[in-house]
Image (tube, rainbow, N blue to C red):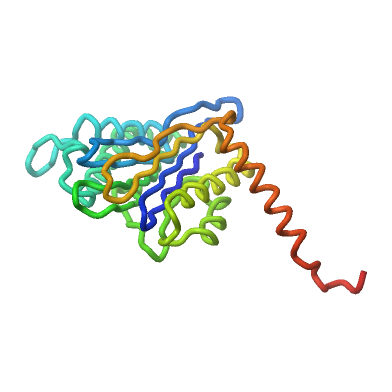
Length: 248
């Protein structure tokens, strides 16, 4: 399991992904799930993955090395896509192809080969966009009404994003809120864990402003966790006690 979120606001795009994978309580590993494809000044694309590791790794490899177009027979790579819509379509094709290769002869293995991906970025003068791609290769797009998308173990972080994020949220505040949602998920689900990869792209800059990994020793993330816990305690103490059950 994993948790990844993408937040698309007026000022830019934030992507956050944990790195924990597990096949049982005694088989926990760390793998990168947030991949950045960048040609500064020309394009920046971010891809976060959740689900079967062999399928997602296969899809990322296909996107980097190239995938044959069934109509033109040309090799198409993600870094050559003319726009974000065409790039999202290529991601979908790569997912379908990788899923087919991983699942060949394994129908009765009992292993799930389902995946989901977040794909966002900007190419040239085109719009900054964020998509969620499914196993079948189809996708949906993030909107201003709900300016974030999540994959993986999303239920613990969703209430925070619902309450705190709007399209007009500052992009650095969006990163902060996304990290709070990640911390809430890590605290509530053992299948999600540090380190966490983050990336931030400001609209129309065509170069990443932030692309780094956060681990347990990161001073800002430690302070964020402690500050959020203190704020929650202070908030519930400040709310009057419920008037049910008689006078105290």
